[in-house]
Image: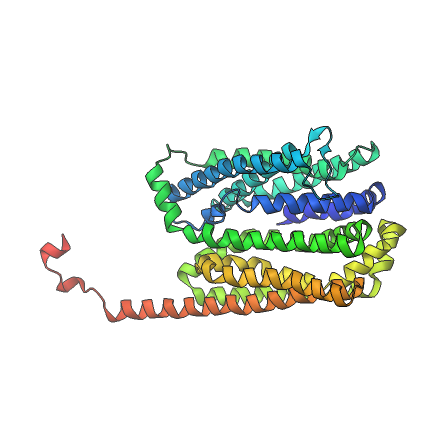
Length: 431
């Protein structure tokens, strides 16, 4: 866990340097690039990769890797066609360039999508076999390389250095982890019938989790568009910078805790769901206690701290940061719990809730902007809409666990009431 924390903390420690090398428009470009790639990567593995740690049989896990890679090939071909059309006809955001470091932007996007998907699959493979040290080492290396490339490109005044440095550092940092992960897979010749059966058995993961994740990215796209429309590129860049800083504690702690929690919750769900509920409560309480000092610092000294550490031009980003500060406990406390939805196989039910909430949040932001086109009103509305959604989803997740506990008790009681007495079996039965 220390190594993962170190890798992510490096991003925060180098922000004072990066903030002086890049402008708010550079961060606007980075935000749009991330939103576009994240939207496409929703379907790049069919979301089947998240099931790799929870499967009981190694053979099924291997077939699940084949299934995720098959989706990657298919999504690559579809994405190539879509991105080529967008590139050819200029159907881009105003803040996304036609080329990055002399590479056509659609080729650059495709490379980033493929690399991120393979890194994600590799992470779940290593999570299954509990090689957390390899994941952590990769995070350290990624953090160092991203920081070095971004700062280096900034000093060299390379156009889109923020975007290109992020991509190159992430790719090289994850490469060794991917090699190690795929070496650990017990590769066998894929059988189409087995992979098809596995895909049908877990079809809810693709049919309901993927659309839900897509609507999350739709929300991100819509919010970015609204901010650009009402406030312009300067505010969008400040929002991007502030949000990245807000999300750093979430990535810092959430990823480290989440990797362990996924494996632990899988075991508890099958053996002791009551302990799973207690574990989830302790996780939420711990994360809330950690987030309180962060909120107080941003609310009391946000603009001043941003101006001091990152430069006077980022003072306004500090104001946006304290307006977004309610997101810290909401995201930090609830993000790891989302895996319980997969364990309880409630993706179908949760998809409809996800669609509604991902329409509700940008709709609330749009209504606030339409009647009160003010930065404070807009970002506070965005924050509290997200907090409300997270609270409701957490209550719902605990209800799923409650149902699982009752089902577990019923199964134990049924087994106790219907024992198979060995002395009552005939010799033929025993054979």
